[in-house]
Length: 239
Image 1 (cartoon, rainbow, N blue to C red):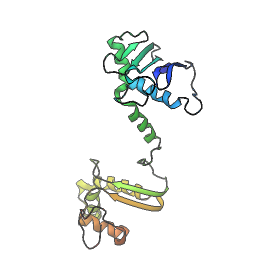
Image 2 (cartoon, helix red, strand yellow):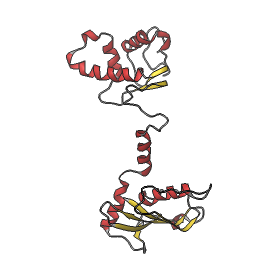
Image 3 (tube, rainbow, N blue to C red):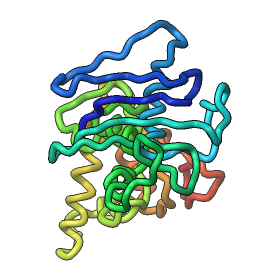
Image 4 (spheres, one colour):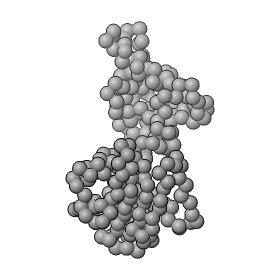
């Protein structure tokens, strides 16, 4: 899908502002001084395609029930569609003349709303590694100065409490637990071998005394601490 025109009919400080984008261009640059409306234009695209929220920050000139945006788009099939969206729950999508769009056209536009825009942008940032606490699940070979590893019970195929219990005696691991043990061990190793200077492990699941003894043997008893208010089982040292 290509955006051909963006009509900021009544949105923020804009009134009947139209941005035209060349259909054959691979890159468009929108620029302007501070407070010119660059961020407002980006938010307008989100509200146009994915719907106005219950509350909005862009009704400081035009009343909320008067907010209106429009666009012309071209789909992969080459068909062009011009439509408008006003803030409201009923008949919010119309053609550029204000008439309600046919159901099939509305379905095409609303189909873009399969996932909220903010979620899609968050996913892109996550996949590109731009989030503050990005999960590096494929970091083999990468190294970082400081690494925090959070280990919980959220994954069906991973249980680090059981992994630590089995690690106490690897030679006696039952055959039906071997794949489970190796899967957990491999991920645990990859995570723990990434730091060049500092490593912190945060367990969000209750650990058995056997698991705590394994951690003390690996990392030293003085490096295992309880931050759960005594909820973890404790042997001779804090965990």
